Length: 67
Image (cartoon, rainbow, N blue to C red; front, side, top):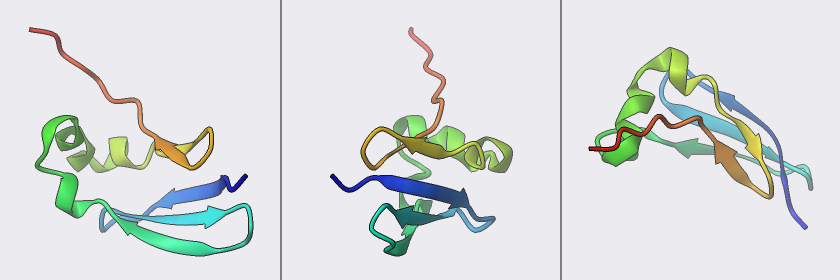
């Protein structure tokens, strides 16, 4: 099964992703920064906390508020 081996957050709100088969790519998060819980990722210090999680899912610790 293909896994995310490593992920690095760049200053321009993109993620450099390396997969277990050696392939690499860039994921641009900017189109999502104005949507729902992703708004929190505009804080660059928070954005840079990204890490691999399970099989290819990149995990941020999204803070929820229940109203």
